[in-house]
Length: 117
Image (cartoon, rainbow, N blue to C red; front, side, top):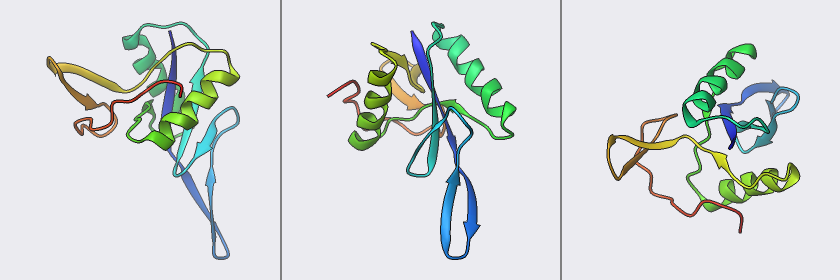
């Protein structure tokens, strides 16, 4: 399955305007940059690759957090652009079965409606 990496933007201040600087091939949304890979990887390999990809740009990155409908729709649109039918995101229940937490911030998931709408 493909995967999507997320990193917090590098902010650039020009006069009174704030710009979010995302690397080439990354997509900007709100205060984050997203990279959707077409590579077919396991969950564990996707997690490692996001970390590696983030380090290449001097920032940490992890599998994406999808904690609201707008972010989900943004990522669904990215999936459509590359004809992806699924992707790994940064959520798991490895610590406690059935209790899902986001990898990027450790918070318990409260939004569960992922997928194209």
